[in-house]
Image 1 (cartoon, rainbow, N blue to C red):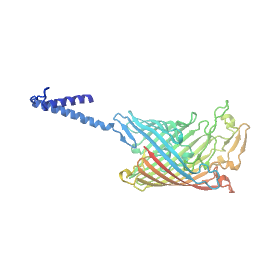
Image 2: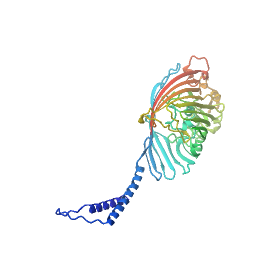
Image 3: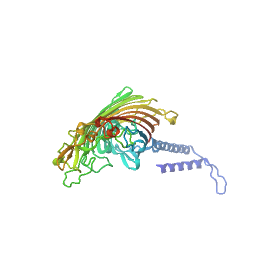
Length: 506
């Protein structure tokens, strides 16, 4: 089309030049001007009009080749193809005070960490298909974030996803880390190992995000974690989110049935005759920061087939103000004493802890937030979305300012676990562990977190967190309070933390 237009343009221009100007002889003598008829003028005008129409049509197509901007350039066409690079940088500096008489202060106090460095791409393809892939390069290692393909019909009432993504757990966990309020998600997600896995899910979607019902089947490992293939997770989540006046409510339940893969937390059995390898469970949580690897609450490893997690979600989102709360119960399907000795499984060592009954644990949080500058917390795809800054610095404003508070509770205590016995499967003899070891399993951790967030624009944020932590029992209670006469699981102590994050994303 372009060559045809160019040819017409040259021809029309030549004709116009020939009609409007006199020709010159080779010797420099002018010839009389040609006579122009009315028919020639009319023909020339029609050619110019046709050429102008073609140029106007071309101009209408040119803007489609110019990238739009959504934190990064996004290119799309009318056939359904689109491409956008994506990524994020989260850099944390934090402080956790050394509690009580605890002498081993390694990795407590001040520390800093590149929490996330992700690069990837997302886009669409003809036929309703989409893709998203991210690599994470934080701390000199390479992993994956979301890596998935999706399909959605034109009606937008169905969504199919296949790949590496969150296993349909709670609101805080499924939401992007770019859009959560505090540096870290609720500690139940850390403790219960809620994360991305390889799998597939199908969702039924309501108009205007009023409901979402989704179910999926996943492997027990993520895309870059393990080659074990005998573990699996069945998960479902149902959301009802009606619009109420100027705001929206969010009600949801989520459920995961998890069958642990072999070697879940322990080494594989060396026995050639063993029918399988060991399955172990372990639940623990950091003190609301990833700048330390110290855990004040930790169940330690114990023999278990799998677990069942059921959770609830509630949120109310209005201009400036929002409230949100979540809770999850984790019921573990533990091995019974003597079950392993009967040949149902094999462990690498002669002894392994088996609870007296099935342990159960609970975690939950309640949060309230307020935007001093009038923004409304973002909500998209029935999870937290990006908050739109009303007056960014680039337009002479002050950016968005948000204050928030959270109460976060985790109970990893269980009488079934603290009464667990060490079973020697080679001799069939079970023995009780010393009280200091037995009662130190688990613990309760409560956090009160205050946050101040500044969004200079839509794709940048600076976050400040103050954290007050209270711990009851747990593996460090004896070392923190060595002079106490109370049993280990009844010794309580407190500590405090502070953290700042610089965040950029696109």
